[in-house]
Image 1 (spheres, helix red, strand yellow):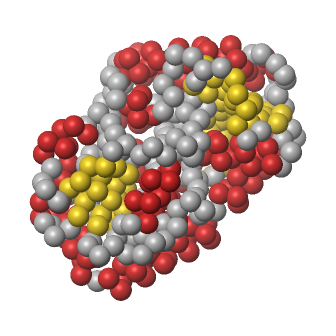
Image 2 (cartoon, one colour; image 1 turned 60 degrees about the horizontal axis):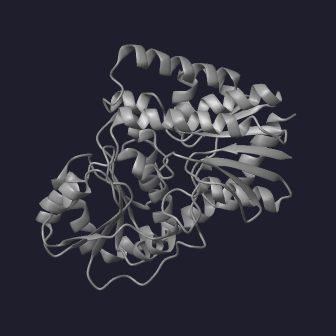
Length: 379
């Protein structure tokens, strides 16, 4: 099967960020399929058998995108969509088009390629756009909202199959008009090889690894650190709010440099007592399927989440971590202090987290599920 894979942020393990498209694509290649990946970058290259076609002048990582203003970001996404459409309209003819959003503008090259080659489209929804930027206050223009919602409905209607990364995203896609029968759930995966449990640190250490942008309000983490002077906090990543967080942080908060690769992130997770998955208190963000949560599970560490819904259910139903109220520094400090004072419970949560990762979020298994969706779309 020839797969035209459209994803602006194609990142290997040598980079930092979500590697889902890389991990899936290389597994598709191993199964004998040809994958042409259209992404941000320069030139054409082969990555473990994946034919990678770069589109110049576009954000190549999501952190850089979120650091820019929303109007500038949307203009840049639009430029990438045009470049990706041009690349997708060139041969060879694919058997299926597999496109990943966000940004929602990825629908434009996806629809163009599917129409040009008369092949089925599988559209993957990693975050609910335009609902997310609307609730975040980034998309306020009424005409722009109507246009974005119309594009959302149109691409769902024209897609042969839709892949949703969480139950909440699946519900949102269906609420936007997609037929339930064609929406498949394939969540993010745990990297069971790279992220592994390590010895517990001597001092109780809490870590966060990921973007420090608008959607990740880490203010409560800084305030919780003030209440827990004997706990070490390590925040790794970059984003538009990192500088202001550094200025306001107490002495027990250490800001690690942006990771040079996934190995650094895995090392931090293994050397932590607990890992944070923190979002701003915005309802749509509770539908996310964040990589950092599944990496925490793989590392065998208790996961601290502040979003009600699926994420809370995962940690509470499997006794794999704790839920804290979004934006509530006192609640976060109280829960972390409890973990610090109950090392046996924390160890049990870590064991359960790793078992959950192996049982439900193994990447090989989820890649097979995604491949089955692609194959089903071509029948």
